[in-house]
Image (cartoon, rainbow, N blue to C red; front, side):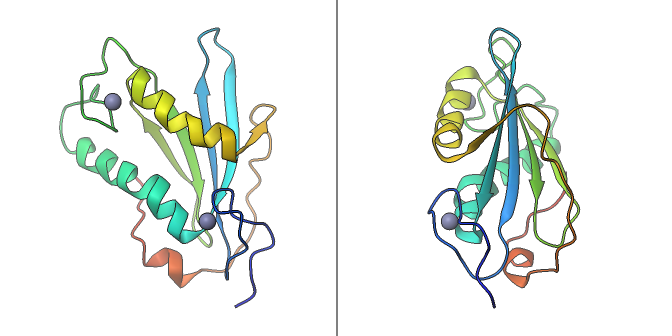
Length: 144
Ligand SMILES: [Zn+2]
Ligand SMILES: [Zn+2]
């Protein structure tokens, strides 16, 4: 398998196959939208995203709409959500809204802002054709 054209944003390595592309966004205290693009190899996507999105799925089955996705605490008075659009190779883009309290949001944003590439705003959401990749199929990401 040829290695990816771009390096993974987290481990900075070119891995065999295609990378996932994630667009993260949230709103700053002054209302400005902060948007970031990261590329993830399968291992780093699993570390950075899969447990979070698995908890999101589990929460979706309950009525705890204001529970923080990261720690499970009530975030209704301290809500600082993040939005993720995830492009897995060969899949339709998946959109997630993650309810977070401000402490957990700050923790999640820290690696994104150090590893990612800041976007001007909603630019760069280009859907490209990409062949399927069995490494990604094995990870078990699912649309909400
Ligand atoms: Zn990586
Ligand atoms: Zn939390």
